[in-house]
Length: 400
Ligand SMILES: *Cc1c(COP(=O)(O)O)cnc(C)c1O
View 1: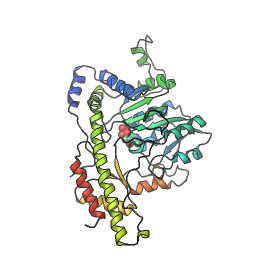
View 2: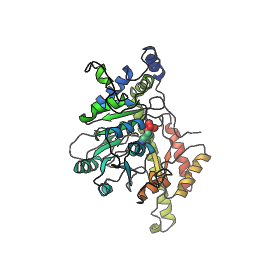
View 3: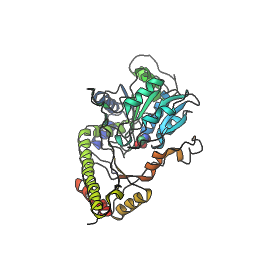
View 4: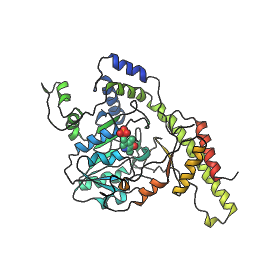
């Protein structure tokens, strides 16, 4: 059986967790937490980093920092994980769902401006599959309307926005918006021992409040730096810090981040080559067999990486022509002991939100909900496994 995901262990996790335990500092914000936060700040140029217990928590901190009033509007893609929307809904905001692009599931920057009203306060682009949204366009719209931008970078560790051809350096995803949230859940490229996350604050104005919210509404961080001589309750907040053993686990993964990324990209490229070949073969087979004008359809479409986006190999997905075609592919793989999965029922159609949605149809989101399938993608998968999976897919479409 080839599972859909399997968390990777680099070998040092237990060692560092043992070290954290015997350092005698078990709660949050100890040495391993500081090491991880410094790593992200230095490697990616994030202004201020705070580890959290999950990506959801990091999004909730972002929502609190946006200081929303009842009825303020937040624009969120509908094709995403629940937490992207829920974090803002909990703060009393009205969530306005945006459609995806035709070319990939990311938020469509071209129709974004039509959703903005005088109540709009925040835009939340989700870098789906670790592939950048069109951040130049989104930031320009945000600036024009004086809005905050929260990047949901849960899937986007070590990925980049490549400003096109004008000599600017690539920008790490998570460094562009006012805030960003990453996830270290076990299904992501790196994990903090199952659950974990990171809040990034890029706008200096919000750093102090972020630390206070992180420390249960107290100014404890300032106290530990010797900036005040006692600490107390100064604001809203909650318990967002992970324990040191989670940070220790994450540190072992960070030490191996380059190796993890290199392997994942090799697997991704292997999928891409094999599956492109299937599309070519399929077209040739159908061209010679029948009238070419009738056979423009492809058996499936491959992931789209725009010229402005790098690939962090978080996910390998296919887009099938219909729900029936996707069901058939998943069934065929399952019969051969391979688990492929689909995800994201559009949030605007969810049981919880459908009555609160304003009724606009979001056709691209619905299309991805029906036709996108994710193939197994994890560090311990081998190139042979990928070749095997692609051979099975080929059986469905190519007559041998
Ligand atoms: C994984 C994920 C989250 C939530 O992260 P957790 O660490 O599981 O709370 C949020 N948004 C997106 C897009 C995700 O993929």
